[in-house]
Amino acid sequence: MQLVVGGAYSGKRKFVNREFPDCQWLSAYENQSLDQWKLKFKTAGLPVVIEGWEVWIREEREKAGELESVRNHFESILSDMHQFEKQTCQPIILIMLEMGRGVVPMAKGDRAWRDLSGWILQAAADKAESVHYCWHGLSRKLK
Amino acid sequence: MITFISGGARSGKSSFAEKLAQDNYHRQKGGNLYYIATSLPSDEEMEDRIARHRNDRGEEWQTIEAPIHIKDGLLDLQKESTVLIDCLTVWLGNRLYIDKADWEDISQEVGGWLQAARARQLNLYLVSNDINEGMPARTRSVASYIYMLEKLHQLIISSSKEIYQVIAGLPVKWKGG
Image (tube, rainbow over all chains, first blue to last red; front, side):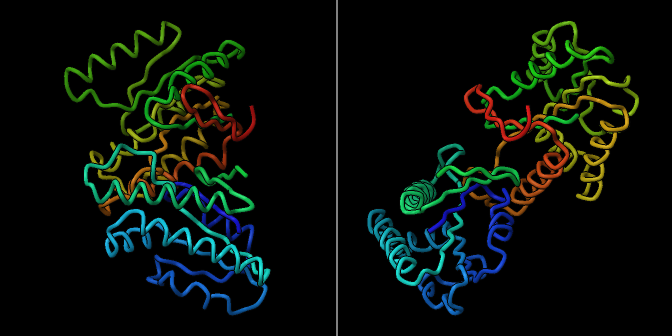
């Protein structure tokens, strides 16, 4: 599993398109659901890119409410993906948004959203074989 | 030569950029040392801050107030001068919200700085802010401001010989130097 992280419009997608020109994409920005992730592995061998995690995290938090249960939900999906990649040898690339570097949000819901996104990002980085950080269109390997 | 410096709020990016520019000016034989200030003196507090900054920088610096138009001023500078523009975020805000400029004008202006730097053999130091790593923007206008700023960063970076990210006063080198 490979992770690409960076701020908004920092060139994450451009990086993935350059490194993995031929991919299948699952995107929250296209209103696709994360539950569908296994269905994306249609063409054997082609890497699958999964992006828009912060959107899925926000939706799940609004549904479930309980922080720990949302966190566990995503961590177990990440574990499943990790296993699945090993079994199928089909690369998985996760694109995640860095959103933890501003001031503490005023609204409780936003704080929860930001906390969850940070924890899930850490879990993804822990499981990933490689982590790249994008900054203003440049990238640097962190792991 | 173009150098791009960015970092979070109060990361020490401006001091680092000033030091880089000043060191370059001392090494350089020709030209002057210019500081292009982008803030508008909106009230007394801001005027005080600007005056304090100007004093802190010392006598070597010549300050040019250019909150909106910078390109034409650059073309008038003495060749091989060292020029610091601080900072892009304030300038973009001025262009968008005071000058009501559109993206076309804005990107052309910044492209013009890069061209002017080449034409006049300037050593141009550009300072900006990492504001895209916080909570996702709530409104379309903030999202589009961040999007434009990122586009400008990438445009400048593509012409930069040296690139630094400043964290806690320490420069992390991304390119050159």
